[in-house]
Amino acid sequence: MVPALRYLSGACSRARGGFPGGFSAACRPAQGRPWPLCQGGRRASTRSFDVVIIGGGIVGLASARALILRHPTLSIGVLEKEKHLAVHQTGHNSGVIHSGIYYKPESLKAKLCVQGAALIYDYCKQKGISYKQCGKLIVAVEQEEIPRLQALYERGLQNGVQGLRLIQQEDIKKKEPYCRGLMAIDCPYTGIVDYRQVALSFAQDFQEAGGYVLTNFEVKDIEMAKEIPSRSKDEMKYPIIIRNTKGEEVQCQYVVTCAGLYSDRISELSGCNPDPQIVPFRGDYLLLKPEKCYLVKGNIYPVPDSRFPFLGVHFTPRMDGSIWLGPNAVLAFKREGYKPFDFNARDVMDIIIKSGLIKLVFQNFSYGVNEMYKACFLSATVKHLQKFIPEITVSDILRGPAGVRAQALDRDGNLVEDFVFDGGVGDIGNRILHVRNAPSPAATSSLAISGMIADEVQQRFKL
Image 1 (cartoon, helix red, strand yellow):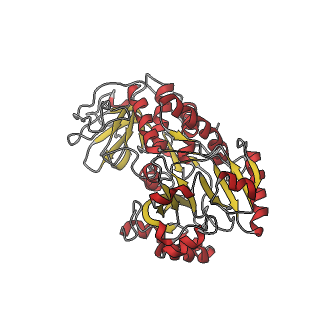
Image 2 (cartoon, helix red, strand yellow):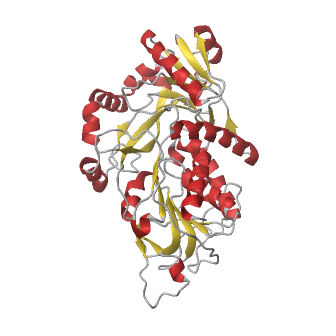
Image 3 (spheres, helix red, strand yellow):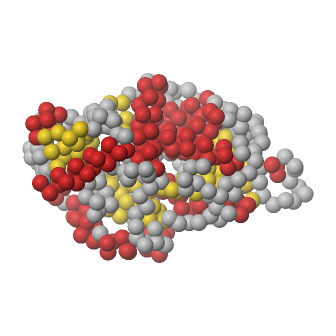
């Protein structure tokens, strides 16, 4: 059994057939062929699945793909609340294929990231998806950072990261001519890719294997079907009813949730533990003007400080040739709040009342103030960037896109660092698996995560 996965049991049978609601092919996969079912149809449509995956981001789609490739006779459906797939965390991340150097040895993050990076590279080669293995330098610019850099190097070796080496100033200049630093870790296995393109390719694989994708299906309720005379014996094979905000329903035997920013709420809807709570952190990026992109060749990262929860501002090349600078990390007042003034009252109340955010703020007060300051004043961010590339000036940058990270937080104000997967108790809890905390490097790790989820689903649900 995979550690941290529990409470799942049950049996499964096959069901396949059309969707009586007239769902339309409103979306398109990566190669332009229409998906068989993609958008919610008329009110109160009903469909029975063996397994339903809630969430159409990269982890949900990879998991759906893994399940149907292993169990091609099962009826499997993906439910996504948006009109299109992979539009939130998957569509707003930096696009980095991480090597696995940062994570605690023997943690799920470390194991799955190293495995997942190899799988992503192989998958992209197989599917003809463009990527660049441009490498990364983690650069110490101050003498006091060198011991931390050396410790990080040792951690990377323990995690089995390929090709790591410590390099000095002259080799830094060979890799990044405009970067200054005293010492760096060269991570040649780090790369970049468009993760939304990868996710849509997963969706295409899933549907070509017979899976169903239902968009515009925002889950409102998860409950057990009542045993009443009007329900046929066949209907009772699928005892879980998932209902959306429009009154449409699907029925299923088992559920896997990959709900990202809403993972705690979906867990609570199913009667399972709402903890750890999700606290949204917005990361704002800056853009290097096109005429200055020659300053950066690969990823350039600072040495992380273990006293603070995030990696710090870094330089990230993109597949389109642009260079992203950032991100910062500031509290978002809406779970999908990509703009500074986006606000949702329920999201804010959950942050204040249910999470341990107040304790986190007190523990990291100076860090939080500094991040807010950098978010407001470009000159503060540029001053930090100049530690690595002195030639950059305020006139060389533009404000860019933003993403929102679904960070799990415990009641004591501690960031939940590792992936969290669990189920629950009771009629629904025994038939459900929650992917509770899958922040970065979840995109890199998506194929490895999906394999682990498929193993656990198979074992616990007796597929």
